Image (cartoon, rainbow, N blue to C red):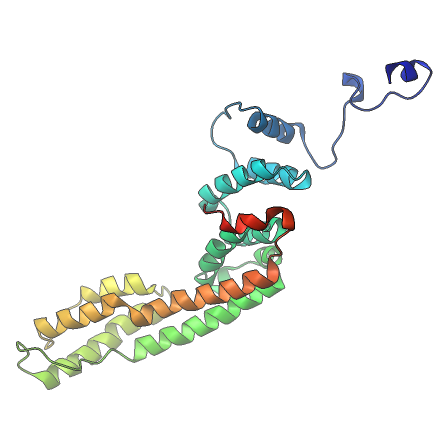
Length: 256
């Protein structure tokens, strides 16, 4: 090779500092991150989100599987430093189902008016449309829960006024849980709404009946419906928008 260059042929990239190899779209800093990881050098301080994204792009481009898995652990650990829509974009682009589930759950609880046009473009039309559908369904379920309190089917022995107990339970539910769940300015998630509800004054509701109903509420059959519904919608969406390349088929089992 060197003899050929002496015969007048053009020097190849990478043969000298003057003819360094240029990788389009990849910076020297990103390649240094790859060298650090490959040769076991300790990275100074935590990775920035920008470093993680550039390094992930590098690893995906050159199919560096182990470095890619290493990065996905770091991205999941730093997931609260990313916008959920950004995580959705990463999950689809790099075929990572684990972060999709986390981001979708967050977006399902985010007011549609707080999702910007930029974030809509990041997650794509199909994902955004499904988030809207999920939120409509969950809001309808929330309205049902707010309007229809669990009935006191059996009054306990300390209840001296069953009729008054039931009437006050109904009134306090609507004015308490109904308000917390449907407050237009600050609607509360079920767990927080229940905590606030338990701190209210319950009028003619006997202590025994109140504790019995609290136990039923804590079991949360109706409340868990929202998590189950969102999870099922997410699972269905994952199957349609995240294609698993053969090289990374076993990554779906990666727990991060």
